[in-house]
Image 1 (cartoon, protein in one colour):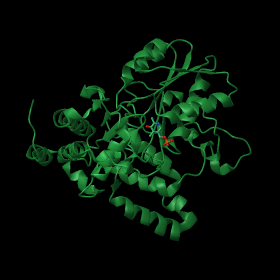
Image 2 (tube, rainbow, N blue to C red):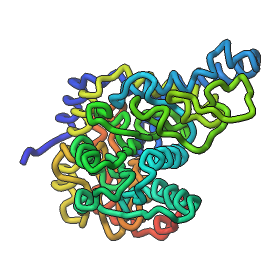
Image 3 (cartoon, protein in one colour):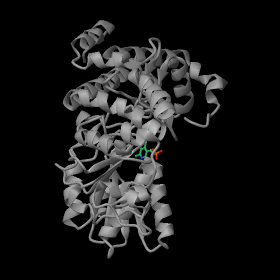
Image 4 (cartoon, rainbow, N blue to C red):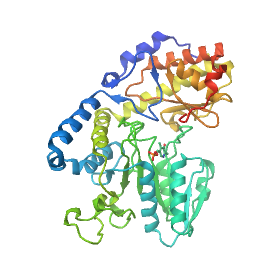
Length: 413
Ligand SMILES: *Cc1c(COP(=O)(O)O)cnc(C)c1O
């Protein structure tokens, strides 16, 4: 095995084709931020954008900003930009609402395409909100539908002619495992299912080719790898062939065919606009564009290559430097099957993560025992991997995590 040192990683940083991007972000010199998979770092330009939107557009131009600053078109404009990052065409993606709401809309629209079928297939270990939203929807529809849960190794066996909608997250939020989008989509469509992909941990983290995979619908957020800011709006993709037929039920005026005719009755917009409901959080959406624009400047192939290198080095260093401390890799060993994060399980995961955060390595904890480290190629350096592991090693060697302060649970882990 290669024996690495700090100079080796500093050399990789000097050769990194993405190295200029780090300077575009607000980051502390002493901290190593490995949680961009949960909340992306702040682009420096976000502050000026927020000031412009609040002070000038809202403060001075007021209602005129809907036209003058194109507030009304923001969902489409951002949607078209996000489309380029996920292999969709123009007018197939719209930026709006939260991820959970878009799950609700997408599943409802998917069911409307398969009225004769009754089963919704989900991955039980998925990030819970997707599954919770579907449970609420099924209750609202009078429990006429059945939810089936399957894990990765049971998925294909569970996909059959009874299933109306299959909704899966491509990159697992905990382990970072990547599902084969093309193969699963094809398999499910051959059995007549509608396939919806959750791209929360994919968009901006790896190349996604929705249309190349013939996906039906997709959803995702912008505050993780797209660096849109806390609670920035999510997005929804509906393939052109389904637009006008796959309808969502939150039929507010922004999804109307002609919102400003103020008709009494709802008429669905013929295109992707039907996925809108009402007035958007314009400040948040305007700021999100800054992160999305930055991502569009980078090559997704270079991002993927660096992401795989960062996670691979992290795993190798944990294996060589922290072998005796009981970490078990919970992410796929094969870099092709791994997203942009590394999950380690440990029976004392919670206090260890708190102590590691105090030591300046910001990751997070996911119950019951997962320490999660996200690697965001736009601003994570190779030397950060080296420094992070040496700090983790110190926490383990000195057993600082045993201190009672690290054992108190906070509301957000
Ligand atoms: C992050 C994430 C969400 C977030 O849901 P919100 O509605 O934005 O809070 C949903 N699904 C998955 C798979 C996620 O990773």
